[in-house]
Image (cartoon, rainbow, N blue to C red; front, side, top):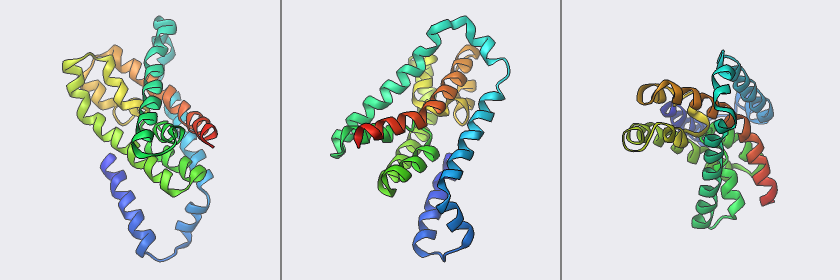
Length: 200
């Protein structure tokens, strides 16, 4: 999935530079809001398809929010640090990191809000986060603990990296992973807009 996304990005850049202007491509580019709303609809469908998730999570009570809170706080603090290293305003760095690994949504939203440079940065950084999570989850599960495996995955812990959770952690962590991914996915558009509003 991540390799396919990387291929599509490279193909898109090459098309933009060398390719002809085609009506379907122009239609997609000019209707980014529609594409964004479709992505949000699909997230809702994904959350709704996890039958019985709420019953499983009731046993954790308020403690179930600790992992998503840590993922969000750690991501935004990492965005601050990256902004300082790159010479960006820290809230712009936080806006990029607020994609929480959801590269397609983060890239589209920041392209609309801030232009293609920051949007491309959001896309690539969140894509790299997802790729690195595939390699780090096995190591984390062996050397730290199972719940810590959720942190690098961020919003992808309910979908693309869930297979790694199933393979390298236990059933309880998988349930927490799905909840974390659903909540983080819902928070991504809110966090990006909030960070960008503070930055602006």
